[in-house]
Length: 267
Image 1 (cartoon, helix red, strand yellow):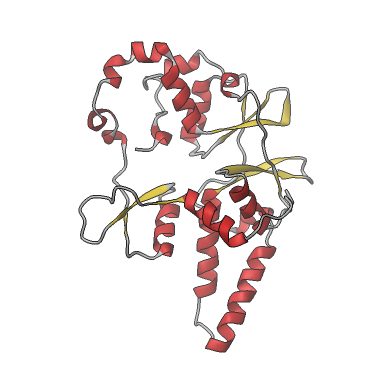
Image 2: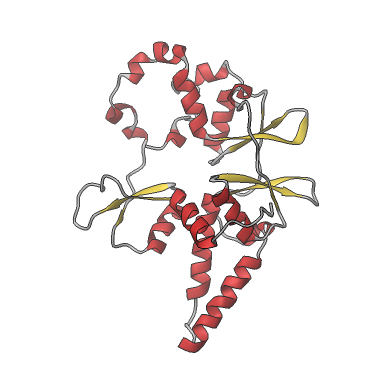
């Protein structure tokens, strides 16, 4: 069940009336920071920043335009890996001696790309930068996340379009909603329903991969369906294995391991 589907497009969705009564400002942490990436930052440093800060989304600032232009996320990490794999395997492979050199050239070219080059990459998420104000209602923020298919919603100061205060995740709205006493009282009948009654009718068919599937096939499924995790099945099993999951979090950890010792932060 994905919490990204909780904020349906209808105002009749349970809890939306309560969210109308609260401003996004209430969701801002008391202390926190927003790590920002420059559009001219090399791609390899942007990928390292995701892993180093254990982040799922980071905003991209264009110094020339003096504004935020994009959100770099784990979805982009998956798309970049798929793009690199297609580049390395497209066309007829050269002879064994030249294969390593060709692969090295492709990898070097990819590492030299900058964040602004993402505009030329086929991405599985909509491009651009949308932002809400701290004065907007939580219901407005929830609808923006849902209607635009956003992984996070940048929150800024209504008096300054270049001021970014927080990156709001769908989970934060859901957690806040569940802590409201009025929600538990007003929607007790809804909350008492089973998962099968309340949530399964809203869910898409389950996507899964078998343990023997290639990593590139699993990543292609993540990208095509814009998923953040896929259950891993044992060969011949009718139900997902209880523990293993193919998750974009593991990609960040794998990148951190492959990158070696942490270098001074270039972002």
